[in-house]
Length: 514
Image 1 (cartoon, rainbow, N blue to C red):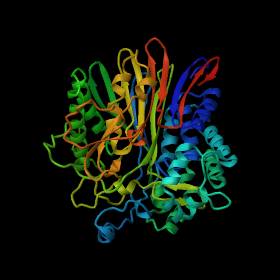
Image 2: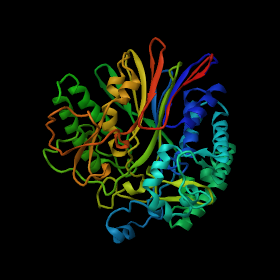
Image 3: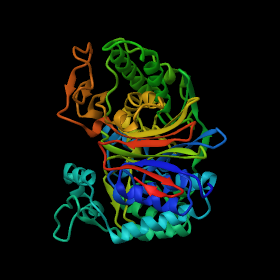
Image 4: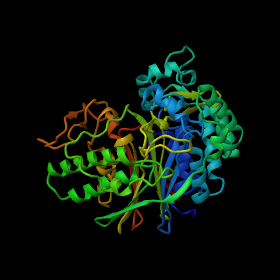
């Protein structure tokens, strides 16, 4: 990026914005700034992302090409599927058996090598190490997660140490969050990111995994590689949309966007009814059909054009994957744009923080199936189906990068926001501020399939076949969406979701501003 380039970035925490501004001030481009924000978030948002999680991204290059970056970790080669079946008949929600190889660091490295500027990732990791050493402060979101998950935190020595003060009391909003062991790991990665998979960090992490009871080994870590692959594409109403392919649920997003486009000119409440029905159908298709292409090509046509449920009950997830994700979006004036999502899946992931490295380990393996013949059946070296769902959109008037927190509901949340963001006249902050709804069951805290709506999100006398539960106000279950745009006349804008702790930052040749 030239010295005169400009960029805008949206992220869910102020520390991520500070890291992005530092990167931009050093001459970094949109990807460099996003990686700096991503590294900072692994320090300040351990309930939602960590070095022990996964990453999926979409990148729009200045020449107009788009690639998907999947750094999704696999199950251990020594996984004992029959023992898992014998234990409970379904995958555990938490614990050492749910930890797959973490992909975040490999994803950062691949993005930096393909799109970053020399030395930018190393500098960002050193900034993150300083943040971990000097102690970030506990945000409102982290304090809320710690309160809600207090019983789980108490069971794990690493999490208890991370989230308790000197008097053993839970940390509260504004308290320091020092993480010296994590800082040491970040400095080691600044010198050599590959050490996470094939070096001293890998050996320390493998030892910790073994002590925790995980079948993952140093060999499993060493085999991991991030993959640059073709993105899924969907054209509608003058916009080209890109989403990540399986094992991401990007096809589910495109299926829902197709319905949102078709229903855009319908009056209410028919418009919402059409979108709710497609969300139900698409979610059910995902649960039946999504799996790892390493096992065999998933039924992409069935995912993109889901069959109607016709009143049938869709499958229920076995637990509620709350928390799950951070999205970071950035675009610069050269047309380099990125939507990057990283995650530990459920809040605090597997419920394990390795005491020696300070790394919170995700529980992505809980999304595997134990049912014979299912596309998501767990197996050695296979990857679980993934909720991470970045999106890019481009029309004759603008380029959009967007992503959100929201677990399985990410396609529903994005379908209620990104189509309108393709209008250059739309105010991104106003769009993200509007009330939203999601459908689900246990994944949104309901036993039966339910439409959970923020006040004002559904029309009066909405003809839903689902029970409608209206929340008291904004809810994290409606997602934390981040969006940035570049218009053809060179305007950069964006917004961060008001449900999260973050905002946007702009870098210009004259300086940096919020």
